[in-house]
Length: 79
Image (cartoon, rainbow, N blue to C red):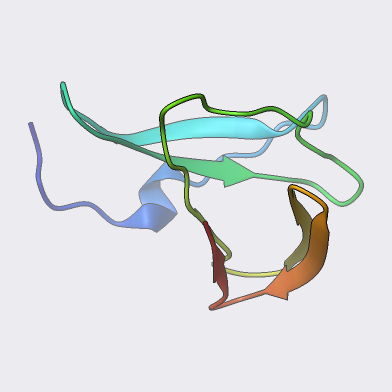
C-alpha cells in the first residue's frame, strides 16, 4: 500500500451524482474524497457505532448533524 498520496490524484467528478473516491483503506480505517458538482448532494444517513469526519478542501457545502445545519467552506471540518 502506498502510504503517501496527493489528494489531487484522487480528485474525480461525475455529472450524474456525487463521486466517492477511495484514498486509503485498511481493516480499521478508510478515507474517501467526495467530489460534488454544484447542486449535487449526499442522501442523509447515519453510521451506527462509527464516527465520520467531513473536511472541506475547496468550495462550500451545507452539512446537517442531528438538528444542527451549517454551511462550511474550505479549511472547515465537521464530526
